[in-house]
Amino acid sequence: MLEHSVLSLSLLRVTMFLVDSISPVAILFTFYQLYQLLSHTTAPHNTETFAGSLNGSVLSTFLPVWFHLETFFFLYHHLQKHRLQAPLKPPAMSDLERGKMYYRVLDSTGDEFRVFFAGWFVWSHTQKQLVATEFHLIRKDNMRDWLSWFLFGYENYSMLLKNPRSKENAQELDEMINDFQLSKGFVMQPGRNGDIEPVILSYNRVDAYIKPLVFYAIIAICESVGFFILARFGFSRITTSDSASSKSSAMSYWVHTPSPKDKAHPIVFIHGIGCGLFPYVNFVAELQRKAPTAPIFLIELPHVAMRLKDTVPTMDEMIGHIETMLDVHGFSEAVFVGHSLGSSIAGSMIKYSKYVAGTVLVDPIVILTHHPSLAFNFVHRAPGYNTDSVKANELFMHWLCSRELFISYTISRHFIWHQIMLWHDDLPTNHHVIMCRKDLLLNAPVVEQYMIDKSVSHTMFDIDHGQFLCLPEVQTSVVERIACASRFVK
Image 1 (cartoon, rainbow, N blue to C red):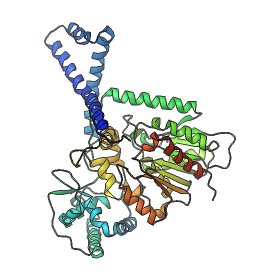
Image 2 (image 1 turned 120 degrees about the horizontal axis):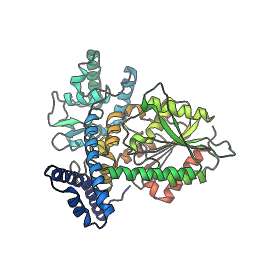
Image 3 (image 1 turned 45 degrees about the vertical axis):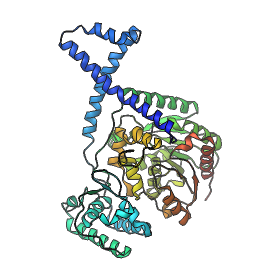
Image 4 (image 1 turned 90 degrees about the vertical axis):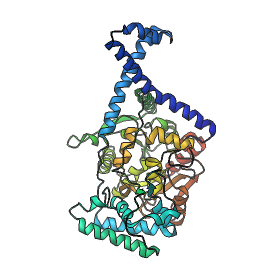
């Protein structure tokens, strides 16, 4: 991740301006040529004049074509953004799961419950998070709205009251609030504070900044280079799908099975948000060196790799494909390594699959996922608008990833926090968690203290989220942990 400094922030702003200017310039040029055409002005002469200053007949042909393509892509992006706004109700928890989850979440907040619950609300006019000293401003109906989404999967309390089990759900919700007040020793004021609103997903606006077509072309080139390098490393790419299922069910992966094999468990690696596997090629090379006899599987997640993909597989589909993948290659278990968002799939495998021999979670988002930091920092944070200052790393994440249309859609509509969250007793014996104390997405001190209190095997580095990929020494340490996990014998 980008280090924060005045220089890096300045360079980032310049880069953002240049990239973000491509679409409006292209649109202006297209309308200018359209105006010339409609006003019977000689377009070829003016086009030559426009590009002539750039010296070359190739440019005079290429630039108009490129700008017209960018204009059409802008229209495509706008239509897709409008289409993807439709809310998507998350899968519901059972009554037993919901009750167990709520009281465990409540217990985990301890004496810091004001910090926790205040963080799940923002001021409507500024979108800034409430702080602990403003907790008293949350009224009972505000809490009902948030709990209706958090535990029941509805947009707000009004929508919860419209479901077939509204009476039972409303009674259960009020009992939860009463138990909350009793256990924490306070009384929540009745009514609603109209100046605040809860932080939610699934029904929030899918916010995205237009990225030009050339941006996605560069991403595609980088990913193709990554694929070429993986092929040179001896990996083969395989795509699996279930013809009886939806098109979102397809999964592609890379596999390298060394010969001869030893007793090392296969390693299944799942990447995070960004441009696919391309940023991980050095990491994969190091993994091959440190675990030369371990089969390695690399799972692709195109919907968070800036590939213009809006088909997002369900967690059940992902688990089924991964289990089938291991069966096809003759393995009954594996060590699962998830980086950032990839830890959500690793976490689901841990909770719902018998194929897990161990796990190494790097920059995981699955430990204390119920805390507000992740949902706010990735989806709702707008550096400089609802934060006190603008930091280069936060602005970079916001512009490049959080506001990329298909990533924003995936997180806003398909991120089911209770499916992926791991408590300490969910982790297998063979586990290790690697986190960063400067993580810009998570509340690292809270997670670190939780892992210490619950004796979770972990390592903390004084770096930012994802920065291990840029630091050879840290990357080697991460890889050694993975190699050790693959040799673990029960």
